[in-house]
Image (tube, rainbow, N blue to C red):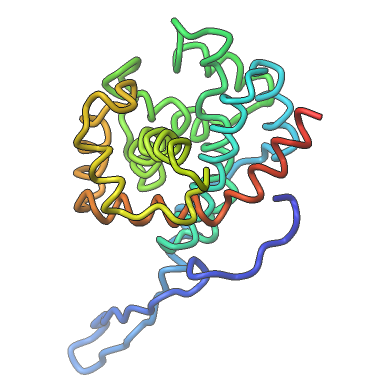
Length: 238
């Protein structure tokens, strides 16, 4: 993931025209792009992926937790590109990679210990807020506000459900998982009972999406990074 990425949908911006009347007889039109808007209010961080990964591995050793972190990172990269936040893609990815940084070592202080750990790599307040916001209403009161935080809140829990569904499939891959199959798993409350259906529903509502849209997009996001996650995880555990 440290390699330069190809330009995706996140780098295509629609243009909007605003009309400003300076004088009664004079009308001037200014064209402002969504890209310019992002530049004015862009979520950025000086934290590198190398720093983030080192911190993650310092406090997490379980293969399952490492795989989940890498998966959510990849999913967040995909969403950033697809939703038109290509300029913030690295930030979205780092928030996904670090979202459970404190969970393995401090499960009773999840999202409460994270700020202290993130301070070790001099994470900005915006990154700390983004990481902690995925626990809103469950373990903390940091509410998701930015689109990125809303996506993380919804997709984090859903990746767990999708991962559980994938492990039950002969292929052991998300490549052949369809929305209809995921819908059945979602409705079966006994399946992967630890994955909160309420959080997933609320996450979709916060985004203003139907559940099926969240399902389809998150499946596609996991497909996009599945091979890379497995490759990096294998390298980590070697």
